[in-house]
Image (cartoon, rainbow, N blue to C red; front, side, top):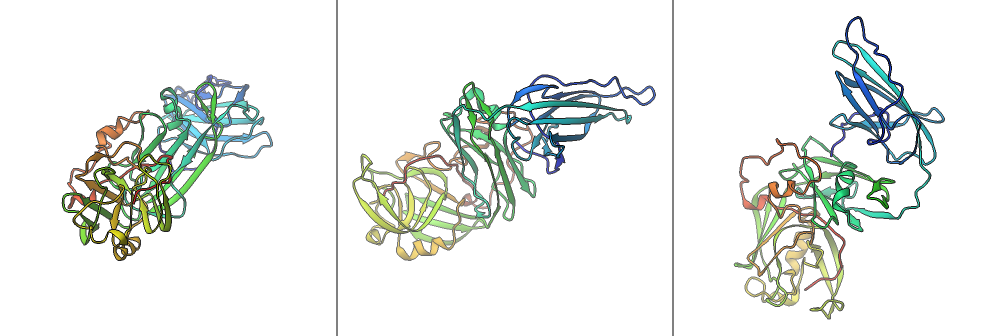
Length: 414
């Protein structure tokens, strides 16, 4: 869901009773004035703090929205791209009264103005659904970086459209995309049909504070972040050759021997994304059925929640390039791991192929592990029909992949 980049003083709810004080047609001469309905309805009470100013117009378009609080202060809002509402730039305050004045104008110049005054509810005592935004501000991400929001507990299917309407992504230059839900509702991912263009600015807003979700829960918080997309880097790991190919802008810059997961603890095959980078970290698998060790590792880069990393493994350098001996990770030499840390970014594509198991949805940032058609089927709202991947095939298969996050353990294989 996208908001127009225009900021206008206006706000509150999108669904609710129809408007107040219908003006008797302020037509100019014989020209008919537009029909205009506004929500929340006039004198509405107990309105959620997530409210928007909803508008329905026939015979014209909205040309002015002004929202003020009970002290006369203007409230900033942005119009939805489809013109169906005006979203406050921040949640409304509880137990406050707001007045919205909306004007619609016909092509003839005739106008209609509606005014509605409503009061927000007291601070809700309903349990909150905890949201986590996996997109941090003031960072530089790789071109496969999806925007991911995780939920605890998961969002029921009947509530996903309402939640999705409150998730906004703006890009500069424009590169529209869509949201897609995991089947269980625990995560929702946003991406465009193609990878982000280097240099793109991505701004995200999860406007969920006070949002009614289902019958008995509300959203927890307002979360925002703006970051940039950096250079295009991709890592391709082939189990058949035990080699990692490193590509920048689709061109190979290095090949690195690897040792993947042994048959009892195989690596996942699929399209993943680098999620975290650590100069040094500790793998502790004592709680895992196949675990039972603690080891410190250098230059570790996570790409699944299940604990698969690319990392320095000086103990397996003799096997790298010929034999799989790890617990699922991609072992590389200490020299190669150090070099990779200076090349990669969080959000870079990692493609693994030819192993014994397939990547499971949600085990990492898996938004790119499905086709575009399959991805769009996961949206709870209609997807614009013209939103399609570019017809030109990438210059190299390494220019494709991606993913999406979810809460999970911090243990890892070696």
